[in-house]
Image (cartoon, rainbow, N blue to C red; front, side, top):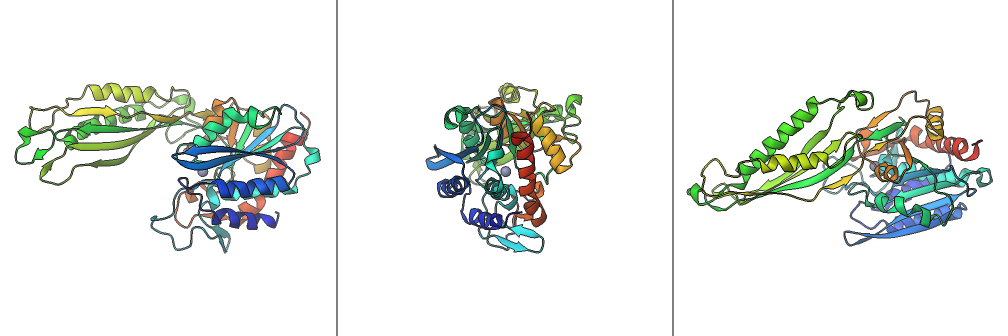
Length: 396
Ligand SMILES: [Zn+2]
């Protein structure tokens, strides 16, 4: 454990890097720390939804093939308006055996450990490149990782890009080697408004959305029944595609025929599937719906499907030096899939074998009074140094 890592975490938590805010001041702070530790650094500037954001790439070691990427996201989910907070989300507090603050587990604690490891390690021992990548926008669209992964050859100034990546998302140090793809889309129903006493004058968008929900729900039940034995060990609770109805909005008043209704849906598909296959199936089923409501037959509603936003699945082949190093350092015996998507989707899409393992706790992520165990925080830096030694300094 390095005493400076508490100070780094305290500073990181104090930057409000909720995804919609600019992460640039916090990323510049991290760049300065890694620069001070003797790393080459490059900020990749981005504009996401009109806001200036940045990814940070920092590297050290000899420019040979076979290095290691260690990565985490700097953005966090919001805290304002989330019920249950009894502490200031942006002020780190250590109380008992926990460290509190937004992002403590997901995943500023890991970033603070990366800085501590960068300061503590003997760079002269790195026979292969060690590359830290800190990203923007993971919690919303993973656009930071989507942009940084293909740009690495250029950002690294010609040193060989590592083919292994370790993402320190909160897993309580379990080693995870896969996750499903994720896809989000919106269903919009446009009906025809009017007085509720004269249903023949309109068509009710909420009623037709009900049919759309039933059609998507039947598809959801079919997928749930189609358990894929190949994924029984990776995703024991749900070795199948999963779907969720996230947000619904529609209607103006109880005595007006609802003219519009919208629904936000996400689904996650198994790693061996085309991530857009289920979207196309939803599209097909929605075309089969009778677009009249139950009250009259005069008018038809229009059912539209919005553009899908997706990130691919991740599935690392078994074996390899990072897997061996993480298993040895954590004492884990088995690997399984993650129930959440990560930046690893885009690293994997760029041909980088990616594993997930971090000090935070998944059940703390996105929660009020988010916290991280002090023991995990203090142990994590030595664990990082261990893994870096095995992958970047050991015999190839
Ligand atoms: Zn995260």
